[in-house]
Amino acid sequence: MDSPPRPQLFDFHGVSMTHYFTDNWENIQNFQARPDDILVATYPKAGTTWVSYILDLLYFGQTSPERQTSIPIYKRVPFLEIAIPYAASGKDLVDELPTSPRLIKTHLPVQLLPKSFWEKNCRVVYVARNAKDDMVSYFHFDRMNMIQPEPGDWSNFFRRFMEGKMVFGSWYNHVSSWWTKKQTYSKLHYMFYEDLIEDTGREIDKLCCFLGLSPSAEEKKVITGGVQFDNMKNNGMANYSSIPMMDFKISSFMRKGKVGDWKNHFTVAQSEEFDEDYKRKMTDPTLQFRTEV
Ligand code: PPS
Image 1 (spheres, rainbow, N blue to C red):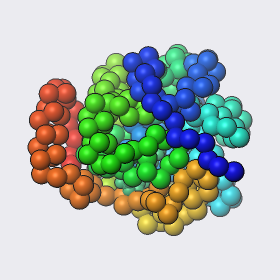
Image 2: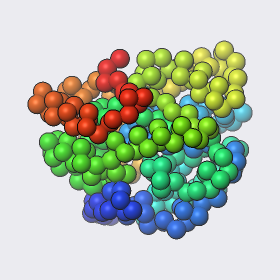
Image 3: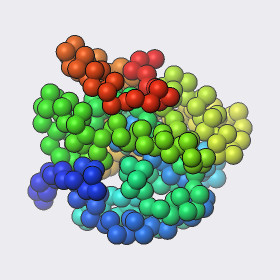
């Protein structure tokens, strides 16, 4: 069967989207959260899968070891707003989850999140990654994922990223508005990809503190080891290798897993132009990203 054509971006309530994330919109907006649901919210390519896997191991690694070898991560932590042909929608997958708590993934900007999550006072784990590495990761992802718009060449993608013409909109608005939300919504834990790279164990400790979990030292050691990049890359349940619309011959989902790969993609002129534009857009001094660790 031929794959369907690549989707086009369009403006959806002021955010660039494709129909794969808006076709089921009414059901998504009416989604009924439960008070113990845990939401992993990110701009694409920020470390969603990494943190989803950490959460899954923290909650279910001990009690359901068979899960680790039989259920891929995208079914354990369904992607709420996705709706692609011939597959259950993310919303249906969440509704069918037998677990408690339910772990749910979203890339929605804060203003588009179903209001039930706020009404039920759910815990939210937001993960952010510096824009330069995020852009590079997103570029390679759009090359290999046939349900994403055509990325075009790097210089074209670079420009579109700065204009916010990406699926799920502007990186700048996404990370900033979730950051602002944190100031008024206490059940939001804001994490950085770079911190996870620097010290995964420390970040898992902080996450556990937020979640009210106290795993044993042994359990923590097993989790920290299991979620290291090479282990996840080689783990068929965590590396997305079973997704048909991703072409791993073009690029892997678990591609490099590094901070600073942007240096292999940005020209000096692009980096300077990017930094100038960044300063104009990111004016909140309390939100700081690291482009190297
Ligand atoms: S998605 O499609 O938005 O859900 O993608 P997401 O999972 O957010 O991001 C994918 C990038 O995260 C990297 N990754 C990791 N890095 C370090 N350690 C671990 N364990 C890990 N797991 C995933 C993954 O390799 C993608 O980044 P790049 O830079 O492309 O390698």
